[in-house]
Every structure is written in C-alpha cells, then in structure tokens.
Length: 200
Image (tube, rainbow, N blue to C red):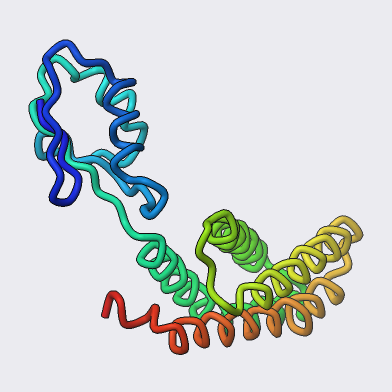
C-alpha cells in the first residue's frame, strides 16, 4: 500500500495498522498544514477517515492525503464567512421589521435560521482562533465576536420575556451593526493581507 502526500510517497507493508498510517500522516503534515481529507483508492473521505480505513485496510492500495497550508485554510474560512455575512445583513433588517409588526410563524423560522447562522459563524471564528497563524486584525474580529455573544444573551432574555420590540431593537441596532463590522474587518483582511488572491 502507498501513502501519498504532495511529492512524498511512503510504502507500507501489507500487515500495517491504521494507527501506523495515521501516525505517518501526522508526521508528514508537520505543523504547517491543516488536514482536509483523504482520497482512498479514488474515493474522497471527509468524515471519520480512521473508521473508513479500518473497514477497508486489507483491500486498500493507495491513500492520498489532502491538506491545506494554514494560510489557504484561513483564506477559505474567511471567504465563506464573508459570503455568509454579506447574505445575512439585508435579512436582519427584514427580520427586525417582522418583530416590530408582531412576528409570524415565518418570522420565527427566520429567527431560528439566524441563530443557526450565528452558531455556524462562531464555529468559523473558533476554527481560526485555534490556529497558529491568524490575520493581523484578528483581535478586532474577536472583540466583535465577544460583543455578539453578549447581544445573543440579551436576545435570549428578550425571547423569554416575549418582548418582541426589544428583540427587533437588538437585531436592528446591535446585531446588524456588528455584522457590518465583521464584513468590514473580514474584507480588510482579505484585501490587505492578500488572502483573497490565493484562491482567485
């Protein structure tokens, strides 16, 4: 069986274990790469690669390791985050209007979608925050993130109290400006640090 990472190829004996393969992958990647997925005999494996290998180890002939540099990974996450924020900004105003009027079932569905989006966005921020290489203006993004967390707590309290006007105010005057701040900071990062040009 052969293990391929970039220009490197490692040959394994037939009696090798999944543990040995994973250890070798970690050794090859060093700390300069972020693991993306495996291509096992032509099949792309994103979810639980260890289990996938374990079930097919006897018949596997070729494993390709797909990884990104930290810079490429940060770039990808920032572009996804920017797209999410850009799509969300106009929706937040519409959502706030719905709560000012008296929310319908559709408004509550959109509210739930907003919370899911915020959760996803927070996960993106955490991913970058846990990396060794972060953008220069990252402190600004973390500062905005902590303000957003605080506003979500206020929003939760407003929902518990069924205070629709306060819900609308928080969305319109607190969350929306924070999203605009995120959009600006992410845009600055993509332009000034050249991340944007890595993929385009």
